[in-house]
Amino acid sequence: MYTLEFDENLCKTCPTCDCLVKCQYMDLSVDEAKEEMIKIINGDDSFVLQDCVTCYGCEEYCKRGNHPFYLITERREEKGILTAPRAITKQWINIGEPRGKFKTGDIKKKILSFGFMPELLELTQGRLFDDLMPSYVFGQEFFCNVVYIHFANTSIIKERLPMVIDNFRKLDVEEVVCMHDECYGSFASLAPAYGMEVPFKPIHYFEYLYNRLRELGDEIGPLNIKVAYQRPCSSRLSSEKHHFVADIMQLVGAELVERRYQNENALCCGDVLGMIYGYDLRNDIQKRNIDDMVEHGAGYCVFNCPACQNALAAKVTKRGIRPIHIIDLCRMAIGEK
Image 1 (tube, rainbow, N blue to C red):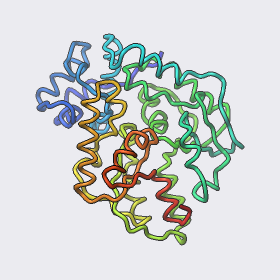
Image 2 (image 1 turned 120 degrees about the vertical axis):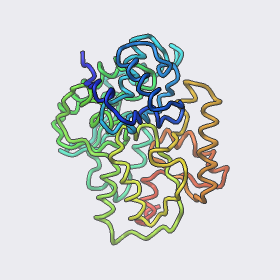
Image 3 (image 1 turned 45 degrees about the horizontal axis):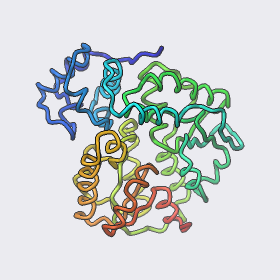
Image 4 (image 1 turned 120 degrees about the horizontal axis):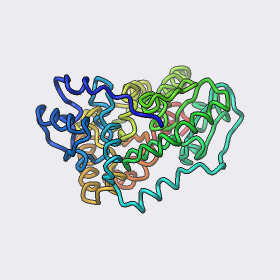
């Protein structure tokens, strides 16, 4: 069984303990944060194991690359601290179970991976993707399973992710453009953290979009709109790619409004957190987030994750903000939508 590569000395010598100090759902001083992390490292009880809402944020806040959230998730599972009722956890685990039913296109050395999100199939239209389509994969056999860290269930990930990686290996691909950043995070962050070899180069679709827009630069018409970006929890596992949001907006002539809940301080859509911890938490997150967009004059809410868009599209629309996926925004800029 794969084990987490974690250096406890990096935590014990950390001068800031930002992983917990910066947490938006718990209030800890540096000394308190260090004390609780040492408890977690030693396998002792800590209120953090009860209060963590699984926003993934500490993975980004830790600048030493020591994976505090993965450790918290490991300890929760070891102690049987469930983040959701067993029935809900089991339901989610069953959804992602490999069933031998998947789709592949005309496989080349470079492919698009849709994981197990059918909404992504509809987004990859037009010139942005005509250099890759129909080289793609879709289905549970290519589903990264990272969502189960929300449910304190790394054992499922350690069982299934190697199988997913092996399915890509069998296709003999060299580059995989991940159309969901949770999939990218599984190959670029989670797999290496557990010592899993990834035999291909994962590419975040933001990076792909940016490069394609530059290739199609003569066709871009500046949009001249103000936008707020809805950052999903999954992007915390690929924070080194977050800069492409601003880079893409600059290319398409969209102004990212300066607001409180962006970049490291972003709030997720709240949907999974609400399902696990209750509607009060979800409603509070969503209200603060959308109020922030409205107060700073955003005309559009730009989405990355289709699940976030499903959760918030109607709500931002009621506040006078147009919801749009970042791919559709890019298609607008080249005159396709």
